[in-house]
Length: 493
Image (cartoon, rainbow, N blue to C red; front, side, top):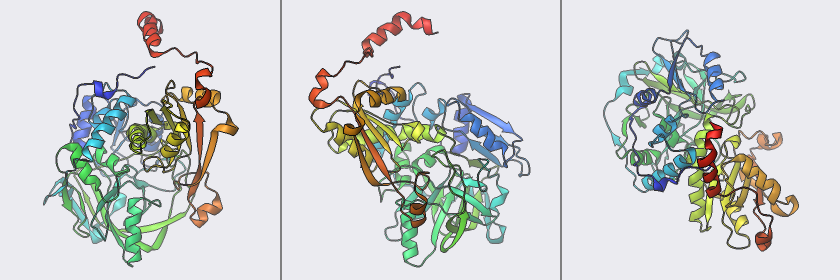
């Protein structure tokens, strides 16, 4: 089905109607998309409920309360990015389709990264309603779930983000890295090569120092989204978040490290990462739809302070088998930004890009172009596979003509089957930047730290030199489809 008109044809403004997670809950409830679940166990049942939600992208957000064995009022929120609340979360009208929402988000993000608003320090906030220091620190009081049956333990950080500071430049980074509970005062520190949090950790390690970190376990969903974004180096996500909101983010300072975090956060862990001490991490059901290996060693983080609001809420964002909530959210927030990244390099007439959910929004990218010259398709696909917005964990890039809707997975695969000759039209790139989560990394490469993969570039465009003589597609054009819908749409009701 054809997507609604491009976002530029709609008359609306970007508007975020929530300041923190509790405001967000009120908005989700207003939309009729919030369900309260009482009595589900953190050991298994919270994870089971979340697994079920992944089969319907319009399933409600779930707020788990009265969790057995946990202090009354300590809660977990999961499945936040679905239904029409995904539009609300990003600050747009609920009528926009996922493609329209992707375009709207890219427009707002591109504007607001140019209109950065730095955060402001405040003395106090709801996060300081409860302060636990030293021997009073107890991470295990929170209902961190075992999200999947095969997980190696409890993960308090799936919808969380870490805040670290570059020791050379004072640049603040927000990064989304999962957090496994090891005991009442210890968690894992898990970052991939090339990630900004890892770069900060490496700098402190080179100095022979521990890395100070704060981990925001319950923040508002937009802050979490920004923590997982490909924001350029030396720009703080807090500044971008301020630009998106149109006002500065209010930050308080940790009592031990002095690192900042939002004054209205739900739960914050503060500590130091020891580069000389590692703890087993995993297995964990990761975003590729498979488990990470068991017992992988990761640096230990000693938690020296815990801050939380009264009746705190963990924001959960557990990956599931694909496609899932994670991949749907990333497809919307990445696709149009990748399109614009390709266009900024000078590639002309890029019609559409979609980072497909079945590939976790990373491993399968479709790009359509209006061919202008020989080699145009190869140029577009190669750049899409290697620019900063598209390089991480990519695998397949399929470039097609502009008569193919790349958002429609069946159309995309049809074009690859009918317009690509495998010997002539497929190229490969070796040693690409990828993720530890990729299950296809060879065991010996994983053991040696060679975390790279290869990329397949599929030219599924009609060959340029005889494109006008290529067999015409039987697919009707948009005008005919609109005519059919207008006259006979009632037959599908």
